[in-house]
Length: 169
Image (tube, rainbow, N blue to C red; front, side):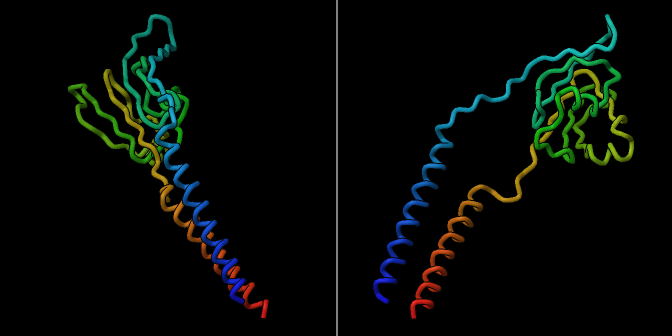
C-alpha cells in the first residue's frame, strides 16, 4: 500500500514538473515570437473613370486595414466588404470619427443592428473619416484556460490513484 502511494506521489510530482516547464516554455515563447504586424496600405476603388474620391482610414479587426479612396456614395458596409471583411471583429462597437463640419463627432455603431434595420446602407462616409473596428474579446483568457487544464490533470491523477488504491484491496 505504501508502494502504491509512493508511485502515485512520484507520478504526480513528475507530471506537475512537466506541466510547469511546458507552461513556462509556452509563456516565454510568446515573448520571443516575432510577428509581422498587418501593414496598412492605400487602396483605390473607382466605379467610373475620373470619379471624385474621398479618403477614409480603416483600422482594426479587418483583413486589409489602411487608407481607402472610395466614391462619396460608399457606405460603411461596402467599405468593410472592400476591406476583405472582418476577422474576429466586434461589429456591435464600430467607432467612426467624422471631421466634416456638417457631421463632426464620434459615433459608435452597431453594424449588426444597422444591417437588420436599414440593410447597412444608411451610414454614409465623408472625407477624412476614421473608422476603427475592435476585435472581439475572448470569453476565457489563456491564463485561465491553462490553470483549468492543470487543475483538471491533477484531479485526474489523484482520482486515478484513489481508484487504484481502492481496487487493490
